Image 1: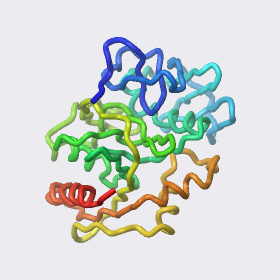
Image 2: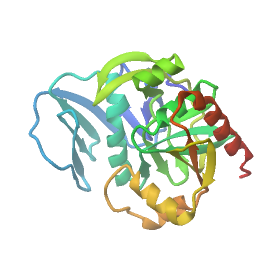
Image 3: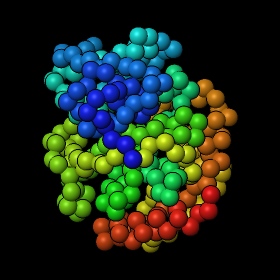
Image 4: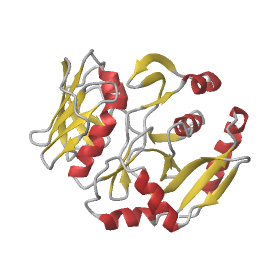
Length: 284
């Protein structure tokens, strides 16, 4: 198990990060071969653009709440420019996620709007549309002592998933129902309650996909390969053509199930049980 050290390089999503000292508890030890980026902040009103711009050497990403992120590949720098100041904890989560996706694209890593957890030595990705209960399900797993790799962005180097920031951000109802979470106020585009995560085992291999859906009862339904490629493609972290389309096909070749459950808080524990049973019952 690993957690952010008092000294030494730290990062998240497979990025080594400098310029962040107040949010080290949200980060993990960084490997020396991870791309290194210095984080900076500016306060002001950057010019508005309707579209993000990504080239092979730099990127400008617009924030939903106003402001922008400027990323330069060499030397590695990330500047967050916002009208009002943003804390380092907010930069690490959630603002770092799109940075990780773009840098991952440069380094031929795939990215998905997904969380991930580790059980019995294997990593499983959890995908769902907005308000599909993804973070709530991950928090339910975390409260059972299961290793959570990431909350809302999954970066893959081959089959290896990188650990994200050590937190899960919940909505008000989820925090109330689970009885956890520190109220952060409005961070990014919504109000958040933060569940701090413990250390993660980190290095492992992705074993498969869990796709979330609502239904009248709790059930797990195998997702066929032709449907996997469509649903994975819709959740990619960057809206750019894959640098290696065959890689996306390989990832879609991993087993996948849809976990369906009622939109009812009373069903959360049973849905969590069903997920654990499914994963443990699948022989690698």
